[in-house]
Image (cartoon, rainbow, N blue to C red; front, side):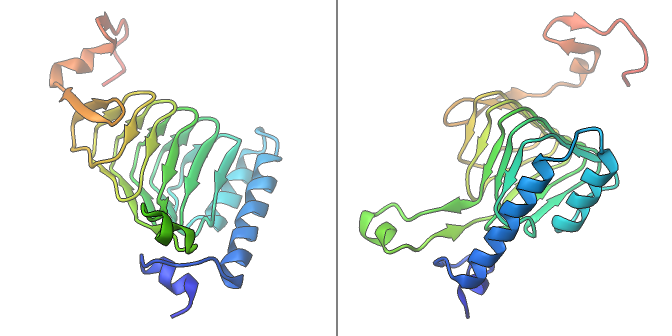
Length: 202
């Protein structure tokens, strides 16, 4: 088993020539994507379609965007990310439908051993991240290796998510914790106690 196969299998691995080649391709893609005009929407979509493992028909990823490999990233329908999304995709990152990311969101599947001796050996690892349908991650949210965020949940800006977040909750903090469940009656409010003044929101 070579180092790329070890990485894909979720085993400890070291960087090797084949991984370096793939990483160079990822960096080249990010450079080219980040230097295309925002008005060239179809070209940008086509680049992502060819680079990611899977995409929906409709999505938008604002520049700048950074990742390692691309082939480990899957996004669902109606995905939107604001500026400066970072995905370290040494393991699979699976994002559901109708997911929103604020600016400066970071998804880190990559990690290093805690102990200094094993860490200094050069071995790394990647553990998958999964984000369910209808999730909103606020600005500056960090998601660490192995985390699953359940469908319909909201993670507040600035949170560092180190453990799984269940479905249908608001979570916040460092480390991120569940604050409360999302209630059905909240459908009529667009921000805190402010009611919608229009009828086409549901």
